Image (cartoon, rainbow, N blue to C red; front, top):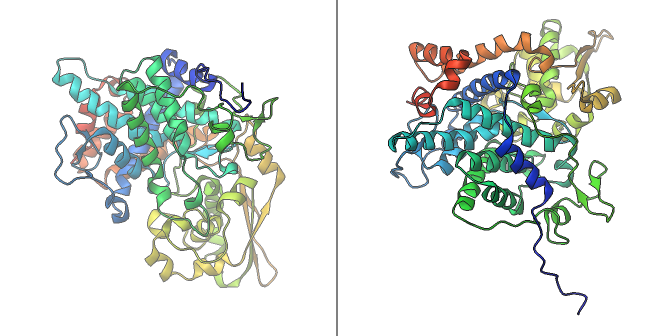
Length: 494
């Protein structure tokens, strides 16, 4: 037999896929903390989407592919009157949720925003709930949405703990697609074989590059990329449920598999098999860890590695606001991941470029005492040249302890410190913030502010009576969990 003939012995599904499928199909969620956090996450994520509807660059993407399309039991997009097929609805919901970079975050070897998966989850659940009622069956309840969110968070977050996709040039929305595929397939009634098939297609897809997140190519695609990924998860689940076969060795196939094609770049963060093939390192089983430890963006619509820098800048604002032109140097002490992803010099081309620049996100609250989404826009930037003047005076320094504790499981800090030096030789104290207000360690302090954020976001779209109705329902864990999904979405559309 020739040495170059492929042996056509079809393998069993890769263990990584089997572990995800078994978790989704068999794990029972009993953690009160996870369910409570998921409820807060649902509120916050929906609120971020409602706030994004104020921005035309976001809303231009929304609605049916073909105008006038009518979809039976179509999924609704919160804050709008759109009724769409679940794939496009997932795209739209994911787009508005992510547009302002204000929803929750997970930081590890890979970073990401697990609530991006709500696009697919909510679209599928709303459609199925309506359809079930029409067929005389029991609707899906919001409890099913919360459970799907917990599982999607867990899949995305556990894989991210020790596997850096950004170091091989791939974007973290890959994990949104994988997680959305898994939980949406379950919601749609997939059996184990169908779920495995769907997951295999999620990995065999071409994966997004990170080009659009980094200078000099940063742009608004990063604001809709997660919606695109979540909607793709819905589509792949649908394909598998129609009986499409899977690709069992999608990860491990020599030469043609995901590991060899897309994950083989030399990378100290990646595990190495004895035979030399890079593979995922999974340090813990799937449970409810990620939802319980997720990071909320409460105070600032800013890339999470800069959240504590923004807090420190707000603290320093009273000391520097009247001396901005006297500043000689601003020292930002930070961690390696922040330097790698959001440290930028030179001209910033657009809002998406600015909300991923630690210097910009520090300069604005130093000068103005706050940071809101409108302050990334072109007109605000053009009207305030002091922002770029301050950026030019900034020095970025890595603190090894910050870098180390960023990855330590019992800490997961996201530390930044700021100190301002003036031309006359005086200086402020160094203000350090290790844990942002959205961190698990600051839940008691943070959740009331998260609720205030949700109320404010509701008020951008609905009258006071509706805002109160939605908020009171979302505050009641038992009542919300028992609410049919379609009835819940009824409250969120116009």
